Image (cartoon, rainbow, N blue to C red; front, side, top):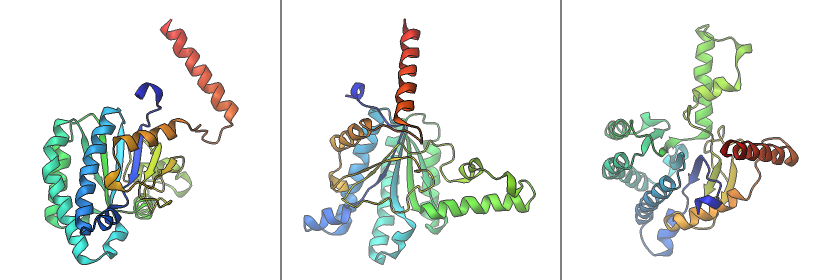
Length: 256
C-alpha cells in the first residue's frame, strides 16, 4: 500500500473521544482513557511499519488541569503505568520517546519516570514518538520568546537580528520537522492549541471516529486523503507540478 501513498514525515494527532467512547458503552470515563492507550500502541506500530519519521500525540493539554480532580488523578496514574509498561517495548522496537511540555507541574515521581524512559530510548533511531504532556501551543511560543528575550538581555542577541529561526531554535520541538499531517479524531474541527507555531503549513484531517476506535485502517484513510492533496507552500499549482516533473526526471535519469 505504501507504493501508492505519500507517507508524511511527521504526523500529529489530537486523540479526542475517549470519554464519549466510554459513555456510549456505559463505562466509566477512565475505561475510555485505558482503551485509548491501546489505540496509541496500535498507531505507533502502524506508523513504524509505514516508515513515518515522527509521530506527535497530544496526551494532556495545559487546559486539562480544569477537569475534575478524580479524572486528573486517573490520567496521571495511567500516564505513569503506560510509561512503565511500554518503555522496554519502545526501546526493543527502536522507537525514541520524547515528552514535550511544562513537565515541572507533574509529580517528582512522574518526572523521574519520564527521564528514565527518554534515556532508555535515547539511542533508538527509528520512529520518533513525541508525546505532548501539560503542553499548550501558546505556552510553547511564550517560553521560546522568554528564552530569546533573555539572550537579548545578556547581549548575546540584538532585537533587530531576531528571525523565525531563533523562534524555531527555542521551541520545544526543535530539531523535529514540522508536521505534514494533522489528524483529529472525535468529530471536532479545531487544533486546540496544539503545535500552533509548527503547523503553519500542515494539512488538516478530521474524522468522526473516536480515538479508541482509530486503528491502522483509519490511519491509512487519513494518509490516502493527505496523498491526494497538493502542498503548495505559497507557490502556484503550475510551479509545484513543474518542480515535481523536474524531480521525477532527475530520478529517472539517475536510475538510467
